[in-house]
Length: 441
Image (cartoon, rainbow, N blue to C red; front, side, top):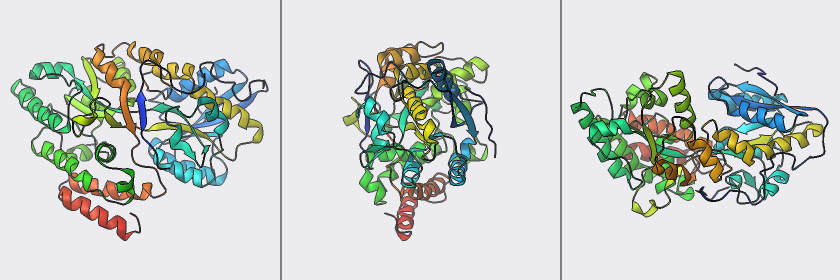
């Protein structure tokens, strides 16, 4: 288990994010911290759980910028393994050795932490932000908030303009349904092969179950159907994925998993012309272009394809709000400082800091979007900016106590279907039957 102190320093409605033109939050948070214990000057050292410190700078950026504004408060990062974060954190919470603050890395685990009494009520912070601050509703139970969002990721369709040009195919224009996406993926593959690009696919679907199932639930399902294990709405999404694999327009699932393909490598080194992926990839792509781990080419983002044309004006996609909570066992003397840190991470100054490294913060305003698109290597076309700013993001899955167990069943079905062990219709039917046999749904 890798961990070290590195440095000082509900069933819910969809999050509607019309990001341009106005800022979020019902109150002025632009001043940053000090909304909770503004008069305190006593030195305080807090600890914050984190992951991926060698590849991502968001935690370091937040703690450093917070310390500049609050020199009496130092936040030290405690690194956890990204792939085993919840298991390690749960063990530390049980042992009484967990950090003072910890991000909810996977939103579907929030009910577990909250119902377990492991999160402090932070309504004092969210009351300042206002009820319309994006993502707060996902971390509120019985009128009390238990974590404060600082990032609002969203999935887009990334595309390589140079490969589109080579294939003689028009760029996505924000009007695509999944049927059009499928047709273009096949056309791109065929035209690129004819142009001498033998090993370039039209599109890439990463191996995660959420890469497919979360779109299905957000665009064609409902919370009620999800918790009832009525998952027939996922079948058409799998049928499309299998068809793309069979047509050679998308890398085979077995190849992806056996060879541990990365989405960064597939898009960043131009092995695919398109790829649905989360907003966090912007920061990674910019960084890898600079380091040489990704090629330098013209690219853009478009809205995620839709089931039909009824949602094109405000595209529905998937994307989690990531929040930070306070360990309920925190020393009372530190709690005020911890709440000040949460106030800061949800503020405009913190949002601009995150935007400056290519991440999509929860706090939204024109200055945030301007900061993201001012970075070297970002697309310059207005369509990408609109796609970044106008969408309706739903979490990976509806939140509830049964969600982790249901997701485990669906992960097994995902692997069985895409590996060809079972048809989409039979695979989903078997998953539904299994859920009900286990007392779920």
